[in-house]
Amino acid sequence: MIISSLARRRSRMFVALLAVAIGATVLSGLVTIYYDIPRQMGQEFRSYGANLILMPAGDEQTLTREKTETVRAIFPAESVTGMAPYRYQAAKINEQPFMAAGTDWAEARAASPYWYVTGDWPLGAGETLIGQEVADTIRLLPGSVFTLTGTGEGGEIFSRDFTVTGVVQTGGTEEAFIFMSLADFTALMGEGQFDVVECSIRASETELAAWAAEIESTVPGVTPRLVRQVTQSEDAVLGKLQALVYLVTSVVLLLTMICVATTMMAVVTERRREIGLKKALGASNREVVNEFLGEGVLLGALGGLLGVALGFFFAQAVSMNVFNRPITFQPLLAPGTLIISMLITGLACLPPVKSAADVDPAIVLRGE
Amino acid sequence: MALLELNGIKKIYGNVRALWDVSISVGQGEWIAIMGPSGSGKTTLMNIIGCMDKPSEGSVILDGVNISKESARNLTALRRDKIGLIFQQFHLINYLTALENVMVAQYYHSLPDEAEALQALGRVGLQERARHLPSQLSGGEQQRVCIARALINYPMLILADEPTGNLDEANEKIVLSILRNLHAEGSTIIVVTHDPEVAEEAQRTIVLEHGRIAAVTENKREKAE
Ligand SMILES: Nc1ncnc2c1ncn2[C@@H]1O[C@H](COP(=O)(O)OP(=O)(O)OP(=O)(O)O)[C@@H](O)[C@H]1O
Ligand SMILES: [Mg+2]
Figure (cartoon, chains in turn brown, green):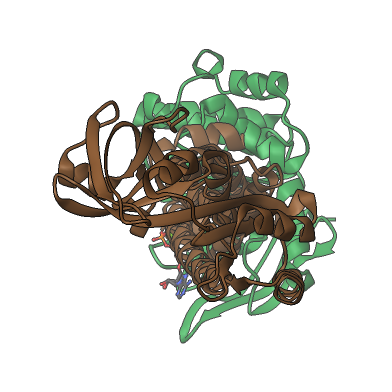
């Protein structure tokens, strides 16, 4: 009887259903994103690469491949995401100055997974990865060939053709760099030490600090530096996001409740005679209350179901747009959203239900 | 013992004396008509007899129970089990079919029973219209659905407030003949009416004026026939 009574009064209930569905969508969508963000951000920030940087102490030729391997041995093997060595030297394309950087492709790629490369990572000799800014300035595309000129460390002048295999976006200064393999770099500039080794290490802040101290004392000629602000800004951003998610969700749920409450109130007012009649026919207060609460909770369940489905797509769309990664489905979220929608509609129905219970059966004879 | 016993009923709304010292005794199987000008307290009296309202003073004893002392919850149960209501405005639920409207009364009383509900519609000659919505029925047909609903739980007392007030003469005759049959089967009926022809059918007519009983006339026509 509840079903047929809902079905024959579709339009008004449809509005309420829509309100619940929207509320549930926002709820499940935002909560999904919210739980997924730390995971996403963790990867995103970790890739901000380097949480530990190795630099040469003084002007000595001290930061070498051997020293790097000595340092690597200090970390547990499974904690090292990547340790990318870099050498830098100014160079020119068409008389425009840029920075040439020599690195180890595999390590750079591991230490900076957030680098967004259009085209391919280089493999062979004479292949380069160029920053977006370089590409924009010189109008280079993957596949283009350009001539790099400059002066090596020993003072000799060089000029060599390189092929662009990919253009990299990092959101940082790297976009003004021309990356090449260490072998190519050494061939142009001559032998030399690394200017910096960027290490991406999976570890807590205290572990990292302990290892840095160990490097400082046991590996002479190498200065380790912790990159702090990353984890701090991570927490700050997450904290703000959390507050935002809570705020938006509560506002939307509040609006949902108001919409459901006014709709149900209108339904009760519209059906005062019917309620009076049912009471005159012997319906107890509890039966009247159950009938309306039943409708409300059914509404909440339907809206909640819709919301779970729509919320997942909503979160998916946001995640794909913002993080470029799919979200993971939170299995607990479906029953959670369903229960919360039912609670919220139930709660919103309380004032209308109270006024339904207060209807006086005597009105039916009075013919109000 | 009388089925219904009213003793010194008073009902006061603010400073309006809707009923003032009304005493009536109705025996099992009786048919009573209540007449009186508008505002004389007829509907107020029906609400009290129908367990939908309590008197300000006086006692109402229905089937041995003093309803003026009962809680609202018990009044609901009494109303459900003992009273059948027929309304001037029919009060059918507009999104339920004729059959479902009858079944609503079963639902609150015990269990919906479609066969029994159809049979009740049959008694008022509406078996064929069972699946129609109230908007698809004429006023007279709607009133017959209302009567079928009032009968469905075998009430010991049928209360009808202006049952023919919204009907034309032909439909009034149909409704009267249904009431006549019910009476012949032993039902106790109280009808409020403005129509002397309807009142004539009853065994006794009680006339209210300003909340008091102004006259009681025994109608002997039945015995004369
Ligand atoms: N809920 C109420 N509050 C205040 N006054 C009321 C209420 N119900 C009825 N009255 C008053 O009680 C008196 C009797 O009303 P009642 O409805 O019983 O008259 P009635 O005989 O049924 O009239 P009608 O023939 O017009 O239906 C009227 O003066 C009415 O205004
Ligand atoms: Mg009246």
